[in-house]
View 1 (tube, helix red, strand yellow):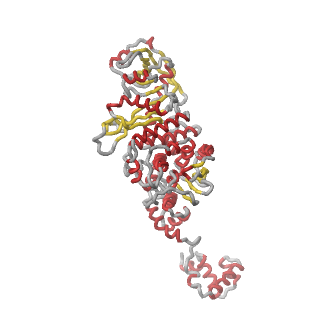
View 2: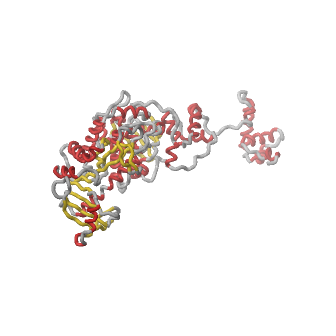
Length: 583
């Protein structure tokens, strides 16, 4: 730009008015000439002249600021926004998005809008954050702020805040309508002076449902008021509280709680006549002296760990039993212990007909005990060299082909040979089904005490047992049963109990979602639960506005059935789930 162009072509409104007024008063040009030169209307320029004369007569106005100070557009910043500037800038330096900063400030009790946060960031010169993967977003959204002190909400005042974990509030109708809340209230679990029994257990459930990585970062969750609302609190407690609470929980409390929950599943018709059972290894990260070595398929080696057992219903996906107190010396007795647990907790409504497990789950002697108790079993026989050689030597006349249903509405052709045999330690004969052409080098040998069920159904029942292995893998991954427990130490038996409950709640939701019941807990979380929400606590109820996403309409339709439910620990209010107007 040439020097003369700076004066002849003003770039700001203030400079343009200055040059126009100078031309009018100093160069004695007419108002019409000045208006034509600078693009004003005649009346518009005469108004500028009259306002200028008026400002010169006002002794309170500094005339140097009329044209030589740039005025800031928009609203003047309030004291609340000014006081939050340093905090917002500090959080942005921690790689947090505008939405994450809003959630952190709400958890701190600082109420400013996302627009104000954006303006502060832009004014400070920060560029937009680059597109990041979900994992990176979660790991970076850890605000280094001191959270509010945890306390019970009284719901006496109206409030409004934002939550990054608002999606987990969609589980509240299931907890209330199915009676799980009443079971928690009547349990033997402890409570503290400031947090009652129900809210204490809901704190653990909230973290399990939210897929937090073994609670490794306090501020990731104790700043989110949506998680606090789940448990009827302002915010969740810090890690030290969770550890101290867990220390007060005993195995007897967990067992009694599982019995009551098991009875509830039975009353709701969620338990069929078959249970799949399997062991899983939960590694222990610490002094391994009291622990035995168990094989961990996930890690491909034996390591100091706790051996746990799970029982799974193949039709509904419900886990009905879990126990971490398994030792090598009583490992084979686990199946009988589960049978006692099942019959004690069903209140005389015993539907169990089949137990299905792998070859090393129990001994042949215990198979005989199951037979004496009237329980059918399906398992795999251990294959020695002589037995394999005898199978290969069988004539073709003893083999037949069967079609067995498998995944994807397809069928699979297998070769089977069936006979009756005896086993050392087992009283009487047992049915034996040898399977080949199933994709393995060695034949599979199914043994059962059910002589009436068709071969195809026996094979199908055992093949579904592999679902429990897949389920255990999901438990380890999604509920982090074998992750290092960084900042928080939770008793493993209590952790497993809460994981079982959280898994079952996911299954109940999945079974209500048309065409999505086959998805894993992780997939349900990603598609439906992982969502932010604007939450408004009002006198007449609680409004949860979930951010728009593709699967939200189906989620809202599913939750409509719970519209009239009141939540005792949330001030007796109803919850209304809606979709927000933003994405």
